[in-house]
Image 1 (cartoon, rainbow, N blue to C red):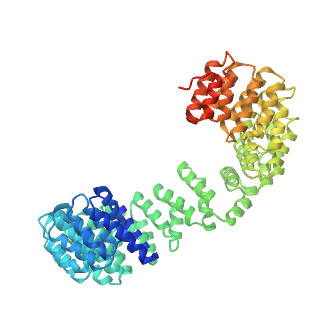
Image 2 (cartoon, rainbow, N blue to C red):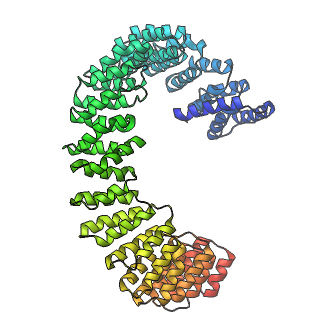
Image 3 (cartoon, one colour):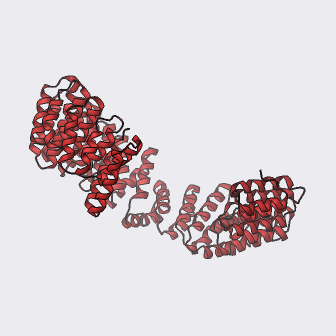
Length: 625
């Protein structure tokens, strides 16, 4: 059996955590004794594997001897190592070290990996000898383990091996050196770390090792690593250039920000765009003036990146450049600038837009109106003025903005616009604005009241819109208004009302639909209402008895077999004992017998072989297959 590295790491971390939290010594000892008994028994390998995993938590030095016996077992070796990696004390180190002296191949590699996990400094001599093993994978594992240990002896062995290694193992030695250098740098020995990183960089190693060593060499040098970092930005190698972008995000100080701004002026547009993004990822020290300049002019890729970056690091000082960009002839530039203007936080931005709007003209006027809506700025008087503009595009932008900004009192303006629309396009924009405003109102009952008040005087087309919006607003007032419309003498309101009631967003519409199904003014709308009522029973969560009660009322009100079959289908989808009884009763109806029998047997299967289920089927004469 094998275990992947993340899971192994999890178990080791869990064991360490539990060792800190602790448990009564007698409890751990008892549990350990119980687990060791399993290892000593003839239990199957799978059971012993799980036992090893548990010993990673409960094991102590007392378990090492039994676990060590499993290290030569191809099936259980990795499981035993899981426990040994977690058990504290020199006994576990010694067991792993001893096993590594006699094993070969994958088992040996596993042992070396575990020694590295434990950072056993007493194994340096053994691992050093393995650096020259004929098995390349063994040599590579030894190098990584030495790198994890990272003491003076391990470092000396790795540096010597790197200098003399052939092409086939050099990169493995380099990996160990990099790991050792990371430990040195983390412990404050940056000078020693730099020396090792540089040795790896000068050796002919694989690209991944070169990248790791270069990153380490720059960061270990701290501010003195800046020239080496700049070299990466000027490298023709794309991987090294990307490394520069990554390291720049980690690099300390402010000098790198100035350097990035300088590189921006001399690199290609494509690379410049990536550099701008990197600059913005350093918000605390970013050279915002350089990004502002890039946003205002220059090659398109750089401008687009800078305009986008300003949404993260910009402030009101970017407003003029963004406003200029948002009216640019290039559609991509204009869109990027407008998006950033919409996203840029700050009340000062809102104030600038509101201040400029009354006297703005041309493209800027339309843009500012759009921004009022996108940022939801309170500028209703200026938007109302825009509704009288001779430019159709301006009027429509104002309507959209009003839909995003007006309060409850402003709904009347949008209702008027819906009624006064001059053409189909204007009407569609006004309707969408009214809908947007209505559904975001915090007091939906008050909103529904405004819409209901406007309904009697609205045009035929507007009545349709108002009723549809009322259904989206929802609530008691909206339901009452739509229900009344569905029962009115107006065929249009009957049609729309019965239709939107059937799509109501809650089961609250059920009584209204049932009443309409019984007393509605036209047959077709009564049928529609009943189907809507059945639909509510089908799609909303409710106690099973309530659902069956709705179904029974629908069955009693149905005048067509088709609706009765829809009721049976609801019972099938939501199986319950009361539903089974209702389906069984429907078997007596010759027109429903086949469907009701099928539904009853389906429900019975879902409910299981219960006495009460059998009793219902038996009384109905239905065979329980």
